[in-house]
Amino acid sequence: MTVLLSYDQQNKKEWQEFGHELAHHLRHCGQQLNMHPLFRQLQEYQATYFAYHFCVPTFMLQQLIGISVKQIMNLFNVEYEFAVRRLEIYQNNKLGGLIYGQASAY
Image (cartoon, rainbow, N blue to C red):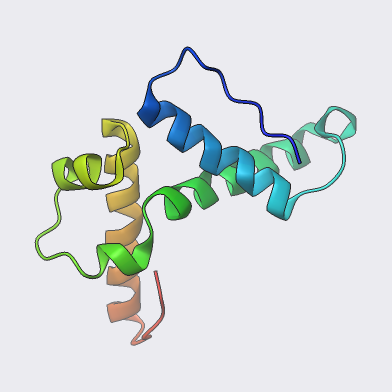
């Protein structure tokens, strides 16, 4: 396995990019260059979604009370936009679980 990261990026960006690239290694196979553009777009979406959960794990968010974007940024060493999106995903999944009466992990 080879994960290529750019060394000129900040630590936060490197951490997020590592999660994204790790997803490609764990979930995908083959060369993206030979794939249909829509399938490549799907894989990129999946890798980004994985990175949100890898860099900011749900089980850790569940232990925090009154979580804020700033807390996520500081605790998990991620950028502002990343923290905002991860909090949105967490809250949407939590709300969806309440609406549908599911006790699922988000």
